[in-house]
Image 1: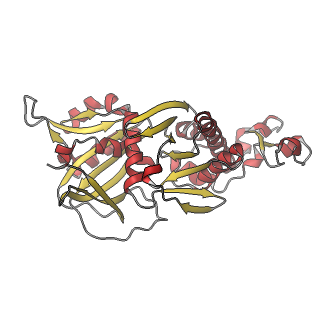
Image 2: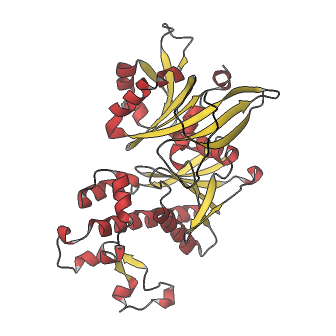
Image 3: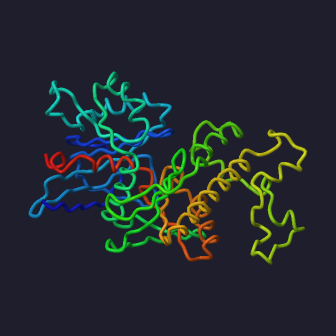
Amino acid sequence: MDLLVHVSNQQNPEPEGQISHLALDIGGSLIKLVYLSGNNDSGRYDDEQRSQNESLDFSVTGTSQPVLKGRLHFTKFETSKINDCLEFISSKKLCLGGFHDSTAHSSDNIFIKATGGGAYKFADLFKEKLGISLEKEDEMDCLVTGANFLLKAVHQEAFTYLDGQKEFVQIDHNDLYPYLLVNIGSGVSMIKVDGEGKFERVSGTSLGGGSFWGLGRLLTKCKNFDELLELSHEGNNRVVDMLVGDIYGGTDYAKIGLSATTIASSFGKVISDNKELEDYKPEDISRSLLRMISNNIGQISYLNALRFGLKRILFAGFFIRGHAYTMDTISVAVHFWSKGEAKAMFLRHEGFLGALGAFMGYDKQSLMA
């Protein structure tokens, strides 16, 4: 039977009705959850409001009538606070969102689809605390499946962001491939996607969201990612970054196309300053860190796109979080190195690709049960 998927955006209410098809993506820094409820109440979705909890109306349709309908819910927890996640799953009775293995000796054995390294690391903990087994799905498979699903099923999912201007991009499904998927989690994976189930991880970098969070915690004493990101709003990276103008007496290096405001060395100005860490504002350090990580990811991504002749680069992962300065920095890096020939694109549900891919891992028989 052919399956058609219809998705529309809604602000996330409390889930009602039967819970089904819970899927997890357990990463090094964050645990992402996607689950389906029978809630079909209408609501208004504010595109500019990016909360921890969001939802999508979802239906899987056969050739003649809907066979599965409900609302997809999205939420996340810090991996270091996994017990909060377990309590959430238990309190919402999300354990019911698994499936029974008919081949198992006990019919009470419930399986939940899960991906990411934590699906292996915390498997025993889920079994001990919740009595559920984690059915492991390949991480790269899930990322690509989740991205393809969003790009095909969700209206106004992909967008560009440059110089403060957000513009949604409608991608022709017949012209979707190939593209470069850059998933920025604790580290960064760069995946060349050629079609459904056809992909290759072509590169990556260890300098990702975990680097920003870890260095930021050491240097600014911020306790969580969002606090560090918020701090960067008020910062001035030029206080700590060495610019081309600092080297060339305030002028451009026009011969090779570098303006005076181009960063020559992240944190380079600290070398010549007779200051200690406490003499610098945490806001400035946070801003410089964010700029350094984002610039690096944008440049490496474009070089890989150039390597394979790809014009479309999609950035995802919870490092981005819809943060304007992060997106703008990545976009400027891609625009600069490609001389305007390539564009960075972002996804509204950027952090849930793996969890969505695991969710789609429930086979058709399970989805239509």
